[in-house]
Image (cartoon, rainbow, N blue to C red):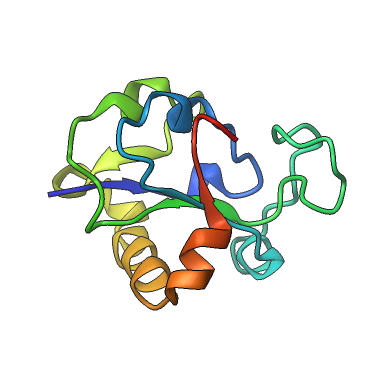
Length: 119
């Protein structure tokens, strides 16, 4: 089992979830195409000072790295994180999206997009 980041994270990317993750299984996917696909503009704050990085894309969880502790779920201010067995029907596609994105990345891509509480 794993946790899944869903649609409310797109354009928000608050990192409260990352701060409590004991295994650093979050990745920052800075892809404006996600915003476009779901019709969500970037948040102005989005935890980034750099306007180039601010609010585009979303955070995702690598399903092979998540230990299913649930610490992230309660920290998410936009209620975007769910256990994979409890993802609401309207967000089911995000279970596959999180896996597809992370499992298709090279080691270098994973290293360059991993975010930790130490970042």
